[in-house]
Image 1 (tube, rainbow, N blue to C red):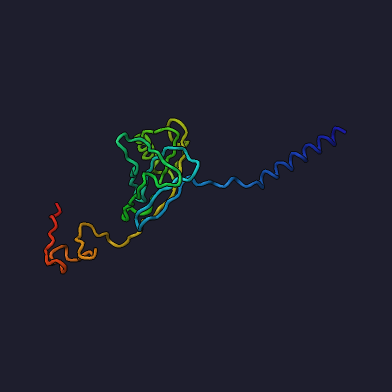
Image 2 (image 1 turned 120 degrees about the vertical axis):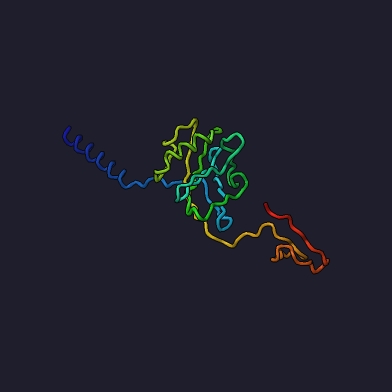
Amino acid sequence: MTRWTGLLTVMALGAGFVGCDNAKPPAKVARAQVKRTGPATMEIIPVEGQLPYCMLFTMSEKGVIRQLTLTRENRSIRCDPNRPVANTSFRVPVQEGKVRVYIFFSDERVPAGSVAQQLYDLRDRERVTAMDLRLPGRIFVETLEFTPETGEPEATGVVVGAGGVVTSDGGTALDAGTNTLTVQPLAN
């Protein structure tokens, strides 16, 4: 009787292991999303349930690392769910190509200088995880990608004429409505 019991136990355990092989790994839940706001601008929006503080870095195809959330204290900032980080859009230089956006979520304000140094040290890695970092508290890392595109050149420092129309002459023509000349200061 003990042989049959042993055989049944081995078969039951074997069936349990086969079932484990068929189990699917849990789906990766995104901690943030990239929202394109222009050809070369983006917003980073944390999803609900993330740690309260974050900091953003980008690493371009050319190896340029940029810190996007720079404060006076050079620490992570408060990041509210479903709202753009720092309530702003970030511009990515087109000439640097596609970037990886690293979002570091933390349960306390973390010094950004040490994160920047560690990210620089890990720049050759395809993927950076929280386990790769030496930081206090709980840390989650989300890596997203953004590819800037060339768009229409932005017009800055031009003269707005009658009816809110931007004049293309740089402000050297008379305004048809008032017969006045608008003069712009010279750019340094």
